[in-house]
Structure formats: C-alpha cells, structure tokens
Length: 106
Image 1 (cartoon, rainbow, N blue to C red):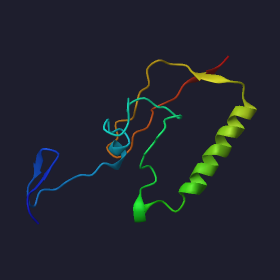
Image 2 (cartoon, one colour; image 1 turned 135 degrees about the vertical axis):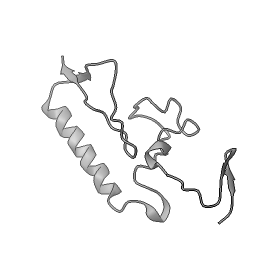
Image 3 (cartoon, helix red, strand yellow; image 1 turned 120 degrees about the vertical axis):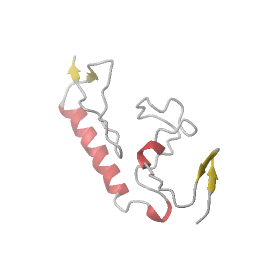
Image 4 (cartoon, rainbow, N blue to C red; image 1 turned 45 degrees about the vertical axis):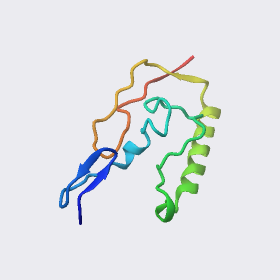
C-alpha cells in the first residue's frame, strides 16, 4: 500500500517480497553461531513448525516420531560419528538440507 522501511532497507509500494522462512532459523540476531548444527542449543527459538495461530498441528507428533527414531537408531547401532569435516548443503531456495551425511561406526 505504501513504502515501508525495514531494518534500514526500503520496500517500495508495489514491489514484490520473497519471504524465505528457513532463513529465519539461521538469523545471527537469534542464534549464536547459526551455521553450526547444535541439537543441544538452548534456548532454541526456531520456527520450523511456524508460530502463533499458524503453528503446525502436527508439531508434537513430529517431535515424538523424531525422538523415537533417534532412540531406535542409537539402540540398534553402535555409536557413530560424522565422517567428514565439511558438510555440503543443497542449493534450494526454500529449504536448507544436506546433500549427504556420511557417518562411520567405531
């Protein structure tokens, strides 16, 4: 409807804006060292399941399924470690994911 200034940038009336939600989980203003995967990060204000009235109805089920999957993996297989120093990510616009995650059992 009108020009808007946001964080020192002007969005002009009529301009298109592309919102990339996955980038929010890597915001250095919210996460220290945002490019490092840290499953123990606390607090972890990620927006993977949305928020507010748009919070995913299946979020609790997804968390429970993840917990059970990781429990089964760790009980079934010997301890493992990531077998590479350098992780390669997909170059997708709306999703950040690894091309591969090589592990080794010791």
